[in-house]
Image (cartoon, rainbow, N blue to C red; front, side):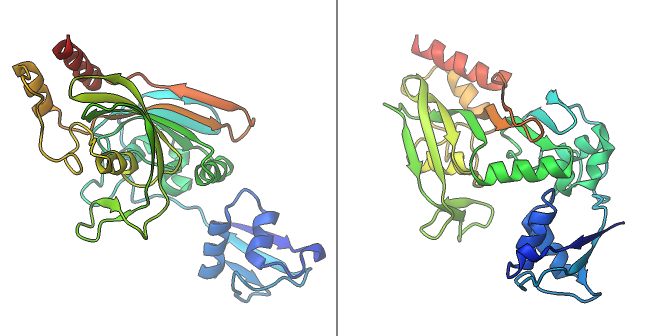
Length: 313
């Protein structure tokens, strides 16, 4: 356990104490500081206080920093496709079928377990440094933080929508052109596992552009402005262009007229949503430079595209 003693300067008088502390120790998020205050790990004169209490100046705050060890998440030797790594971040090309972190029904064999084996120091970070997630059956690029400073910086970028995330998706239907979908998303009241378009949901904005058109399907680029759970899947299904292979939002398998047996077999046997995180752009937390990574389409999606092209020829 590390103990920090922080003296609040007079210039901060009348500020909320959680805001003052977040300014004094910028490596930690305000939500983290608020949690410490509420749990009694931050004290003034050995007494607890509330996040909204006002500062008088010259208070000495004693803050107990516990090492947050994900000791219930065990390291496991699982191969990782690491696209980039330095002292601050790891960029990973996640395969489909790999769950991001342990949870109900998946307590092992996850990306988090693999990361803890790759770098045991990640056990000191929330969620082993994972700052955003991809669905189990979505493949592609993810960024992971390696220290508190980069974790806070990346979370802030995600919250202010400055991280650029571009996906490739193969959908049902012949799209004429691209567009934008600005529809709020929340948990489906009829099925708690699913998300849905809800008037009282959270803001969600997806831009999509046509990459290639086929007789009854379209290869599209989807760019996220927000990062809601299942956002692309929900939004494209909402405009009646669900993803091929999506068991939750795609409905039954549909065949185009005069589909050959090869295409029918491919559509039936494509057992995951045809969605891949293709491009990731962010500001590096240490050097402030904009960095971009790209990941080629995985073999299963490339094979699907080849069969769709052959059917059209």
